[in-house]
Length: 184
Image (tube, rainbow, N blue to C red; front, side):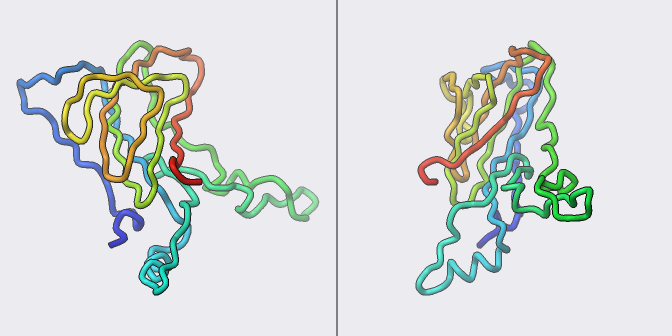
């Protein structure tokens, strides 16, 4: 089916039993869900994929983190110019052009566990947080020997837990980003 493309998705977090300690420590945890998104409806995509010959859906028009993302803002209706004519700038009041909300706020010096899951349909993604390294401690529900990475390749259906220490300049914000790997 097309459940993931239709937005019927989420993450189930399985906690360790009471009294059992994990082999790593952190102060707080957050879920990070990575998704690909096509701007055509699920029905339009399904018709093409079921056609003979197959009509491939091509690359996603957006990548989402926790259900939020951007696409080419210039494709949105431009803001009206003060003179009443057509403006050339993006309409900042359009939800696709407005600044993205904060993924999460951190306290300097604390360590955060990010439970990262890929809910992509057809895209392999790379995920990173600007200026921060991540220590991978779990893959698909199994503890792993910790390894430090700058970015993480995440394929459809995979989950990882990474530890991120808030050890950068606290006076600024840092971008979390994902991009498709292996294709344009």
